[in-house]
Length: 539
Picture 1: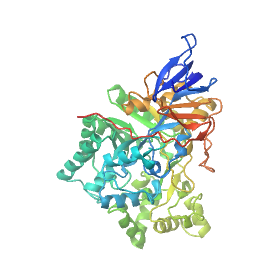
Picture 2: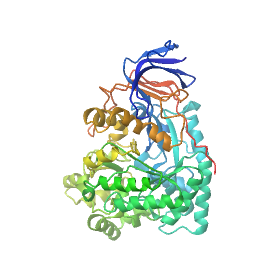
Picture 3: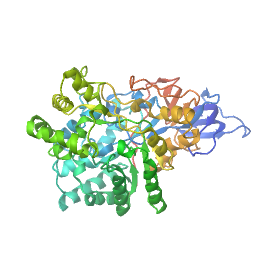
């Protein structure tokens, strides 16, 4: 054997009771599991005395924004230190493949606030296959920090085929998008994502989305929508996605399934009742959440959808025009723009967390828009407009509109999984990027008892592996891949806070991918064991 963990408390990912055992690894897989009394203890070249520490499958981040971070930062400690061994990227309908030169330039500008502008990265890929190959080879051919699965981004597909215009796709355009979906899935993507409050994906009709999802279903993938409202129309938006997926015969995974804003306080049981009804009638549905109340996105995402037509340069032109900017302000502050989920924006809840141009940080990052405006003696919209123009749509924000009761209620559902939605870019990112998984284990298991340890680990491991159709991941079983986490249930905790969001967690001394130690004694090694994880289903 290569490695043996002796006397570990095995939390195997099934949700069943934990147990004591020695777990031996060989050739990147779990080779033996010996409970007391099962016979001779396995031996190996390396023995780690677990002494009752919990040994679980590696955590799967079902909603990650590491599309460029995996290629920019070989350590990627933000995720490796949490015990994350697999991330699902390509989220919210916007990412970097498939593209042509024009689309790539526009997408890079559109989501600078999520990932930075990609300076220093050689964007030589254009197809999904080429992007996944880049992940496989990573840094000098060695690989990347953690494994990654890719969702085809519907907004990027629409930009590539239709452009950034607010209009229905023609039949010919829809057929071309369907071909691109089929090609991307055949090349290894695991499904399709949408960002239906982000341009240009939000311009798609349900009929268009249904056609794309029928292709996804043929490849046994899943549809992962950031749906059309998390605010005033949240329940109707959930119903829309469930109905759409059922028409298409497609599995559905609801991204960051929250119930936010004052209109939804205490309404999580209504969402769960909707899910239970659909599940009882045979729908294939899962969801992910992060264990925090604030959300995180870009400031430009708050704009009304009509202001985003034509792409980033058209948005900036509208912001520079006084009359059009006043229309935007009225839509956001009085009507409730669709970018802000139909709810009039409260600038006291919008905290600037990052900017693309560092010289803007001192006067904005860590302040709400309302506070920054007061300090300048101007109205909040004037501050927001000026910042959007100066930073070329780059600012990221924390939006403080969530409800703790809803967070706890939703995480208890039987189809729930964990997803950080972690944006790693910016001077003051959301702490979920560095803390989601230990926060589940420390805060919601040990301190609050919302979930048992065994059930929580199942939410973070076997359930997402089942959604991804990965039969050899997500459980501590003989033959499974040795993607593993060894942590202390008594001390595991998120170090990241809103004040110090890049602080690493405690209580997670060992993380392994394919049997190789990527975290050892709580420190990041130089191992790059991550690869692209591809689906292989064919229609």
